[in-house]
Image (cartoon, rainbow, N blue to C red; front, top):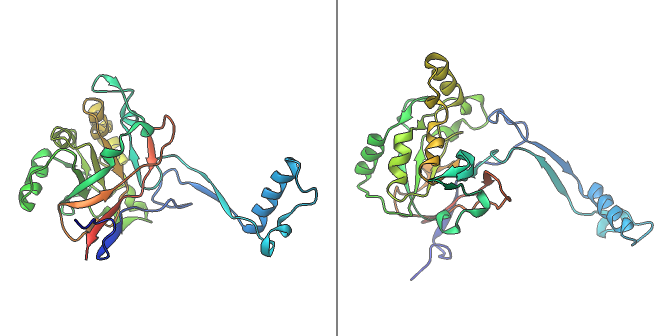
Length: 269
């Protein structure tokens, strides 16, 4: 049987956004310090000198007088496309200690993806369980345990602007539990956050004093264990809505609440 991973007629579709310095779409924008080949050549030479090798070593001793470039990133782990682990939601999930990102089973992070269209949904509102079912009925699909559900809002088109932070719908508690209750362990969304925007949660809390308005979809993970991928992109490029081979492995950061992720879908041409 031909594998979508190796078939010549398979196209890989990148469903991520980059980590960018100074982006108006990040409230805690990362700082990326770049060192060129000469500067890093001197740094590497210094390391060798301190180890007792090459008293006069510098970048000039490298081929072409150039060492290796590298970068230093100062950023929260929730910058760019990333997967949230249950530890992000709270210290316990389903009554047991919550998994950190380095404890997430790899099996959760690959499988068949299902894309649900919520590009019609008004920004700053919440997606309901009934709306999830309506979208599944529209594409004629019944969920199976282990599938990865992707919520398409179209908000990725706003990446690079401040509107990216505010103009999208979010998941509700009931919709999140509804999916996880059907054996879904990973849910992705192409918006800044999984819940409704920060400013909408803040507005509702200020009006009502009801703390259930604060990150309700995230906190569903305290009751039902799951992971979510935030800040995805390009879901509109997928050629179909179901049975999409997807790999979305997060980097392993010890004891962390999330890990940067580059989801890749495989589509036959």
